[in-house]
Amino acid sequence: MNQPQIILLGPPGAGKGTQSTRLAEEYDVDHVTTGDALRANRDVETDHGTPREYMEAGELVPDPVVNEIVVEALADADGFVLDGYPRNLDQAEFLADIVDLDTVASLSVPEDELVRRLTGRRICPDCDATYHVEFAPPAEAGSCDDCGAELTQRDDDTEDTVRERLRVYEENTAPVVDHYRETGKLTEVDGDGTPDEVFTALRETVEA
Ligand SMILES: [Zn+2]
Image: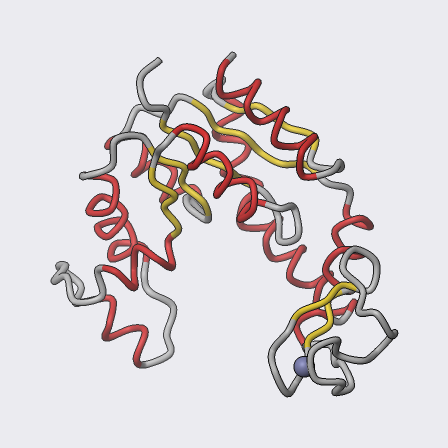
């Protein structure tokens, strides 16, 4: 097959980053994230200024700028996994005009499982080591393996914040998912399994 052009959708905690990286390795294609593309092209002049102007002001980079940067990032790619884009319907419609997608996969994971994954994260304030109370616990509960400091939870990872992040994601992305469902492009992949199980399901989707 030609180098595949893949979009991977999924809420925070669904394992999108991990699976995108594995897919990019498997098919020898570029792993394109909006964040990386913006950083790599921060000084590209668009009709609405450069990404750097927005990033340095701490503002959300507006859609027209993001779109131009994504075009730039995809122009040289021989196949890609696009991760974190499109994030809304306008972006999805824009993308439809510039690429012919082979696969749009959406990772589904029950909300309570996402909450369990996201609220279990702990970090070491001293050395930045990361843990998970269930999936990657330290040898001694609450203490960093590397330096012994007391582990903490980021504000972003508390249950209320996590549920709010999931709600915002759902609100923005539901129209994107519907769009791909209506155009017959969407495959929903069960993301509630081990990373290997999910990857196997994704590979079957890409090769179907
Ligand atoms: Zn530490």
